[in-house]
Image (cartoon, rainbow, N blue to C red):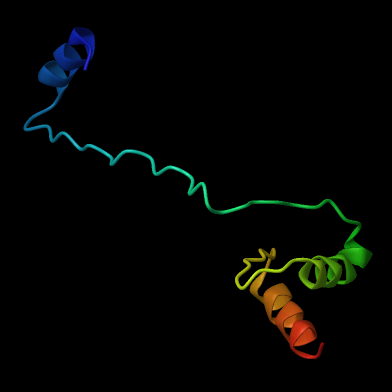
Length: 79
């Protein structure tokens, strides 16, 4: 830490504790990340087209709410 910061610590703190955060993890290069901007009313149909076009075993889809995730899950199960 810069000397000025350490001087402030010594002046104003009693028994300070140093906490270090682990290095930020790196993106897995084997994972392909994509996104699509789609009008709200067309989102489900667009997702279905993407899923049908991709040959992948695993996919993660993010939704705004748990309710939205539940509804999407039910829709996808009925395909």
